[in-house]
Length: 567
Image (cartoon, rainbow, N blue to C red; front, side):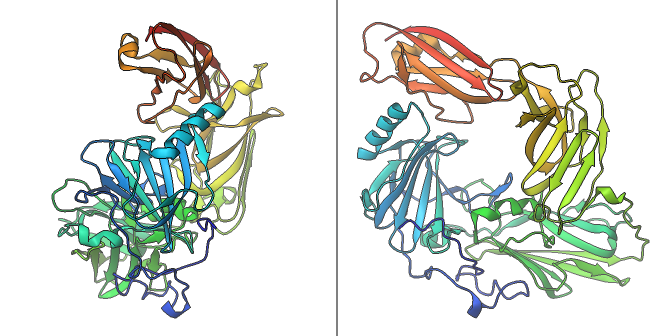
């Protein structure tokens, strides 16, 4: 049985970091259901060379946490990847996002996902290639029967690579606790193999006066400060703190996420974050916990991220209500126990705090369903989508020639925890083919990017994940196909094409050689090149050949081009 998708509530930190759930927001240890004892599970490393990381567990990424460890492979691809323990391969995939992917279930209560591989090995490699030709698709998925592909600890199961959305050769290793489905930090299993004597270092602090309830340095907006402020910091009312900090390791220049952050004020702990585990569904809570690269040391009311713990009964917010110095101390620790501290003082200064000015219809509450209805605009934000109250800075403008008004829901991006339905009406419905309309997000500089959407009775209906600025645009321009170094195709045995689309992006592609399906793929999504490795089983050597590539964008615009080569 594959247990990866089974979810149970769980609140505990890895045993190697004592005392990480002693706060008021965490359950008592006796009430917590836990998985296998991490001290009892045993793994061999995925490589037979020294372990060095390019990324660690829980690093701040766009809309998600980094779910595993990135193992460096010396800038090379093709390094043998070993099974960490005994049992079997449970899932085999090729995707544009993670490249070649191999899931392995182990008999000690954990499973792993190995991403960005360059190749599978043995029968799996043959089976995947056959399926790609059978389905005429680069992206394929296989779920083997349990035990169909058994593995032993140390067995070579794949080769490392740089496929999918990858910026360089490495192995991304996710570790999942089978009983809960939680992503957990793999580092504790390899601690004896890791050299690290460097503590995390802070690079800045930030203070958030709460809307209508606090002020910092005389203003009711968030303020950033250096780690060692040279000028006094004053505040009054309710404020939250945050810190920008990174971990480091011996002998490498990479920056990593910080495992544990503890904030104390006047000697009392008010908040701690322990980045040791999370469920897949918790990923977008990162948008509530972070502000850019700053980690907040308070919990917004709609944030249910289990790795955050507040112990002062006020979600980690600090009440500055006396004209005296308040002493803030941050303690930063990595998973190996290296620790540093940051100290700064906030001087209480009695200052007038103005209430938030707003119109009631634009006040969105985090704990209720919110509706916005304006001429040409309908938006529903269900309960549970907002992390905190939002007072929308709503506006609308009409740009001449546009097919719809441009609607600013808010003057800065407000992430939502899930997708919410929005409808935008068309001012000028002139297209016979309605599929060419799309909803566009609008950047601060006026640039547009596709959100998608479907036409329905004079409106474009779409699901959005941010409160930002949106309009409707038209895409009738087909993609462009560019051959890269065609004179080298015959010599290298590799055909490389670049497909480009300026508006709604490439949605699908299909190539043939001499009229028969050719296995084009996107080995690396950063470059985006479409590549076909010529195979004598499918392309006859010794003559002139014709490549035909068809590319379709997000609105159904299609381009077909022919190219010729000798091989």
